[in-house]
Amino acid sequence: MPAFPKKWLWVVLVVAFGWPLLAPVFPDLVSNYRLFLVSTMIIAAIAVLGLNLLTGFNGQISLGHGAFYAVGAYTAAILMDKLNVPYYATLPAAAVVCFVVGYLFGQPALKLEGHYLALATFALALAVPQILKYKWLEDLTGGVQGIVLMKPEVPFNLPLNEDQWLYYYCLVTMVVLFWAANNMLNSRSGRAMMAIRDHYMAADTMGINTARYKTVTFGISAAYTGIAGALSASAIAFVAPDSFNIFLSIKFLIGLVVGGVGSLVGSVVGGIFYVLVDNSAQAISTFIKNDLGLQFDLSAYTIFGLLLIILMYLMPQGIVGGVYLLFRRLRRS
Amino acid sequence: MEQFLEQIASGLANGAIYACVALALVMIYVSTDHLNFAQGEMAMFSTYISWQLMNWGLNFWVAFVLAVLVSFVLGVIIERAILRPLHNAPVLSVVVVFIGLLAICNSVAGAIWSYLIKEYPSPFPKSTFGFAGVIGPHQLGVVLVTLVVLALLFLFFRYTPLGLAMRAAAQNPQMARLVGVRVDWMLALGWGLAAAIGAVAGIMVAHIVYLDPNMMSGILLYAFAAALVGGIGNPGGAVVGGFIVGVLENMVAYVGNMIEKTTGVYIIGNGEKLTVALIIVIFVLTVKPAGLFGRVVVKRV
Image 1 (cartoon, chains in turn purple, blue):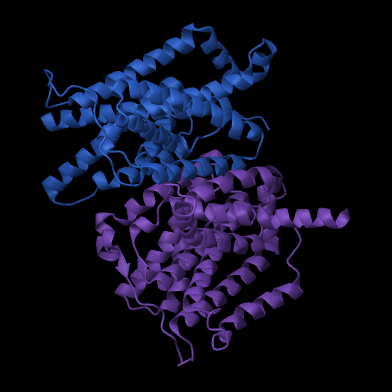
Image 2: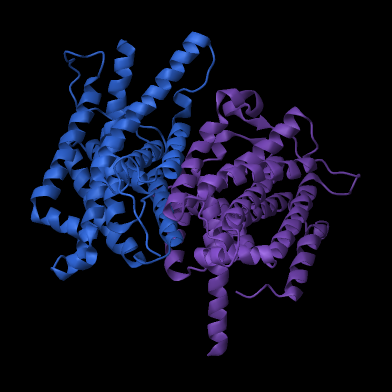
């Protein structure tokens, strides 16, 4: 897949940064609710990028990235709640903690491949809510009740409201993280990661330290998803164990598959997509009930599940890859 | 002492359920090399079907048989329609499709029957046996039903031509095809059987864990642990593994309870069931991937 054209990248960035400033002109277009929604999309995009680094670029399947998201969110929440650490300082802390956790989980994962790694991470995803409720951690994690936090405050008396500031905070984090990921993937290390995905044994023979690359990639991937978790903790201002269930990991997976396995732009598309569907499922459900008269409570997961299966048949490269292929075919004919 | 025996008995009853689900997982694994992450949700769906049938006024056992038959058909349909085209697909695609199935089963069950927790009746008489107090009638019934199912399966695979054909198709598809076995259909039948066994497990366990769309997630994890302990790919091993894991699960909780009582320090209890399963899964996978009874697979590269 080609790199995203630079010209368009600047356009997107200008629109992304300038859009909230239109609030006085078009108050309907730039409501606080929309800003918050877009912030959650940004967080989702970062989380999906984390999964993509591992699964898409390194070929290690993970069904348990919700676990690292949870570790990031809880690291941030505990730091803010117990130690009064400012919210912006929780991001590097969450990244470090998640890197270590991911690196350690990557050690046994080295011996597993394909289905077995999927199984181990699936088990991890199922066990996360219970681990968070563990009695010894209760003082820190607040047990079943979770932790209630404060929303990030606007610094330097900037003329922004809370949601606008949150939006910029998330956006800047995302731009930095995507820039870093892009640089890493275009470097020697990134090519090594992809070589391991494409042909493990050939990569090993060419002198790539496959074990180290795989564990470090696991760590980096976990750190990305953990940062997303930490952002979400400040954005929602609340963490509770039962929100980090297996379905969170499934959402990341749908983001990965919809956007495109092994595509940076795809991660953004995937993140935006799953938040959108999650948000509109309620509306579709009421539509089915009121307008079609069916007693059927459609949940977002029915759509997710169907899409997962359909996409695997029709567009195995995700929407971004599929649209690109379609575009190329149209142009040629 | 009595409490100890009680724990073992309830461990065996849970183990019977795990053995069933593990057997279903192994059946799909041997024939297609896929781990069916949706097995638990499929079983849950079958349980809801039986509940619905009972709600319409059918007797428990009639509903049981009907639900198992419907699950069999659904299993065959899923294999033919969804998994057939993915036979040589990369692992990620297969895993993604299974997760998709899981999400669909879970959310559709929630949509049709709501997420409210429902009571599920036990078909076994309330009367007490000689060793009541140690093992309840429902638990005993669960173990018996499971053993009957296992015996039937054993007889089917050992003594019927169809069973032989299915084993042949799983073991060596090409040779089986050469001698005239319709391998495709054998795989579909395997899927149907797995779905049916899962349905039995779901219906048996629903009285214990209550009926709700998420009831099988923990059980599925333990079933995976059981299949791995027994050596995934070995049906007999899966059954033994199921009982081992079931007893182990209760023993861990029991020992944790004892420690808390004697020293006052809480280490592990019922709240850590899934964590225990996670540890078993990762431990077996990394230390002894072949399990207790599995063959070590040597791959030629």
